[in-house]
Length: 111
Image (cartoon, rainbow, N blue to C red):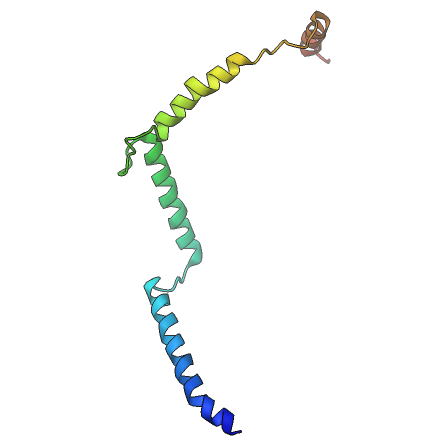
């Protein structure tokens, strides 16, 4: 009983200190969100707008050390993707009979 009476004031002080500490952390996050759907829509809209401006090259923080946004996409399609397509041989492993059969199957209409 004496132990509880001795520890209780210190425990109360410690709990109050932790409450105020975490309350200040929570206050640093801003106001509580009332309409979560509206907030989520605003976040998605802001992200989509930033994404589009990055692709268009109108973003505020344009990278100058490497390609980014639309220039990076253009580079990938014209350099990397086209080289990869050129390295693929679409008819390798197919015989003339396989190709003719595929052509016939594609042109035969069902009436």
